[in-house]
Length: 486
Image 1 (cartoon, rainbow, N blue to C red):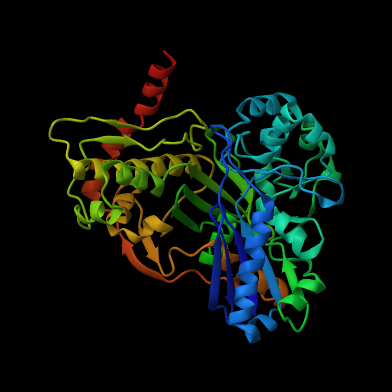
Image 2: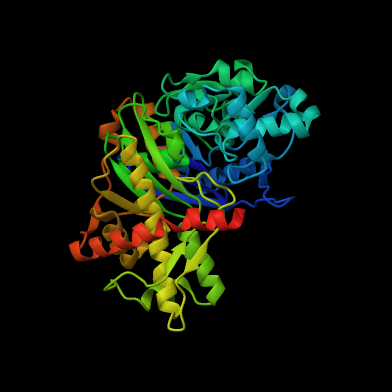
C-alpha cells in the first residue's frame, strides 16, 4: 500500500493506493488563507500539519489493515511558499504563499543583483517565486531574516514534521529560483544574491527517490507494521503530470483549475524566460518540463457566474455542446494579473465589443474563449521555446465542459482529449511516486497514461475563424496597458 498527501492551498487531501495502483480511499481537510493586507496571502504551517495528521488518522481508523501495510509515502503540494524556520525548527512567521504579490520590487532587485539568474533558474523573477519573498523579509522584517536558519517549501515542512529531515525534490525546488534547473542543484550565486547559502536549504532528492523513513512514532500511531519510506514527491503540477502519465517528452496537458497551466514534458532544459515560460525539473530523473501559466482560468467563469448570479452549469447549458461561430465580444481573463506571456501583476480583465444585443450567452461564450485565447498565447511561447504541442489532455474542473473542450480544440487547432479521472489531484501522483520509491518499479510501469474518454477534433472552418479573432484579441492587452499607463 502507498499513501499520497497533497498540501494544497484550500485543503489537504490524502489518498490510499493499493499495490496495483488503484485508489482505495481518500480523506481531506479544509485550509484557510489569511490576507492581512491587500495583495498578501499567508497560511499558518501548523494548519498543514494538523490537517495532514487528521487525514491520516481518519484513513487509519477506516482502513486499518491497508494503512498497516503501507510501504511508501510521498507528498505533493502548493509551490513557492516561504516557510521560515529558526533554531530548533521553530516557525518564525506565517508562510508567504505562491499567490502573494508583495515582492514585485524585490524581483527587479534580484535580477539586478544576479544578472545570470535567467540562465541559471530558467525563469523570470516573479513575486510568486520564493527567492523574492526572502528579499522582502530581509528588507521589511530584518529581525525575522536574521533568525532564519532554514527555508522550506510547504510540503517540505510537512515532510520535516513527518521524518525529522529537511529534504526537497527537484520540481518544487525549481520554483524557488534558487535551483540551477539544468544542473539539478542549488545555485550558490542566486542564494548569495538573497543573503543565503546552502546551509539554509534542504537536501535535494529526485521525486521518485526515497528521502528517508517516516518517524517511528508516527508509524506506531497509524498502526504500520513496518516503517515506510517517504519519497521526494512533487510540486502540484508535476504531481498531476505523474498522475496523468505525462512522463515522456512531448506529453502535454491543459489544467483548467482556479489557475490554468499548459504543460509539456521535455527531455532537456528548455528555458524561454523572456515570455514568462516556466522551465522546471520534472519529478522524475533526467526529465524537465515547460509550463505556460494563467492566473485565472476556471476562476474566470466562477467570477462571471457570481457577477450575473447564475450557476456555472446553467450558463454552460444555455450554450449547448458547441457554438457555430466565435462570440462577437472579446474577453481578457486577467482578473488577478497574468504570468505567461506578460508577467504583469497589474494586468486586468476586460470585455470588449459590447452592444445592446450582447446577452448573457454572448458574454458566457466570450469568457470561455478568453481563457482559450490565453491558452493559445501560452502555446505560442512554448513552441518558440522548442516544444511542439501536437495534442493535449484536458484536466481540472473545466474539463467537465464539452463546450469548453471544443472551443479550446478550435482555438489551439489541435485535438483535445478528456480523460478518466480528469479532476484527479496531486495526491494520486504523489502516491505513484511513493510506489516507485518503495518498490523500485520503473516510472513507465507505475505511470501509464490516463484513459482518454472523448476526443474533440478541431473544425477547420472554426479554426480559421478563431485565428482571426485571436489576432484581434492579441492586440487588446498592449492597448489597454498603454491606456492605463496614460
